[in-house]
Length: 347
Image 1 (cartoon, rainbow, N blue to C red):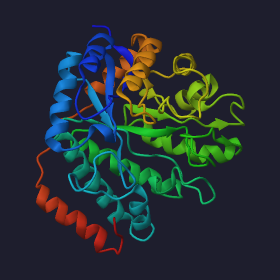
Image 2 (cartoon, one colour):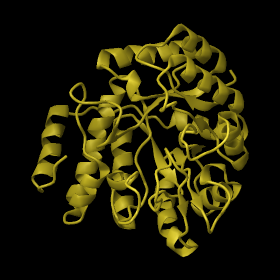
Image 3 (tube, rainbow, N blue to C red):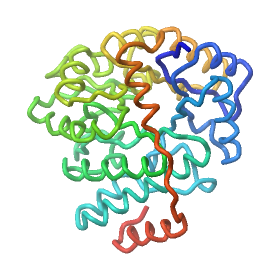
C-alpha cells in the first residue's frame, strides 16, 4: 500500500463523505485533529474509528495537546493540564518533585488521549525559553536553562510513552529565540552559532528518545540567511540530521502558517527537497469545509509517496507506540495534585 508523505486534518467533528473519499484515495501517513474536531469523548472516539476505516489501517492520529494554552481537548469535557512552564517554575526550587509531576502529568494526559483512540501527540516543546522574545513560545517551554528543559522534556516523553502515546518533539532546531509568531510572520534569529548550540544541545539530548520531530519556520541568519529551517537543506542536513543527530521522522510545522510564502504545493515541495520526511498541514486559519478539503488535496498532491529513509523512519515511528500500562488513575490524580499544590505551584 502506497502511503502519502503527509499529515492532514479534517474540517469538523464528523468525517464528511468527501473527506472520507479523500482519505481513502490519498492515504496520508497520519491525520491531525484540531479543536474544531473535538467536542466530546464519545464523538472523538467515533471520529477516530471513521478515520481508520477510511484509511484502511490504524494510522497515527495526532493532536496538539501540550497543556496550558495549547490544548485541543478542552475542559470541562477533558481535564485541564498545566503549561510546561508550570513544571519549570517548580523545577527552580525542587527538581525531583518537578520531574515527578511532569512525568505523571503527561501520563495522565496521555491516558486521556489513548482512551479516545489518539496515540500521537505533537509535544513536548523542546525550545529554550528566553526573556526577551515573542510569547508564541513563552510558557510552552519548560524553562530558561538547558538542564531544566532536557530533564522535564525527558519526563514528558516518558509519561506519554507510559500511556501508549508517541511524542513529537518540537520545534527543531529551536524556536525559543524567535521575536515574532510564525503563524503570522517569518521570525529571524541573528544569534551566533555558539549561542545557538545551547538550543541544539537540547534536541541532541532528546532526539534518541523520540521517533518524531517537528521543524520550525524560523530563519537562522548564521546558518542560512535565505531560508527558514523547514525549507533549508543546510539547517536540516548540517544541523538537525548531523549536529543534533536526529534520525526520526522529521515533519514540518504547519505549512499553512503565514511565515512561509508561496502556494501550499510550493511550500511542500521545498520542504521535501530540503530533507523533511512528512508534510504537516492543519488548515488552522480556515473554517469552510470545502476550502479545507482543497488545501488537503493540494498538500497530498505535493507530498508524493513515503519511500526510502522517510518510509523507514515512518515505520519506526508507527512501531514505537507502546501498549499503555495499567495505572490507578484516581491515585495518580491525587498524587499529581499533591505534587503541584504542595509546592505552591498551580495549573
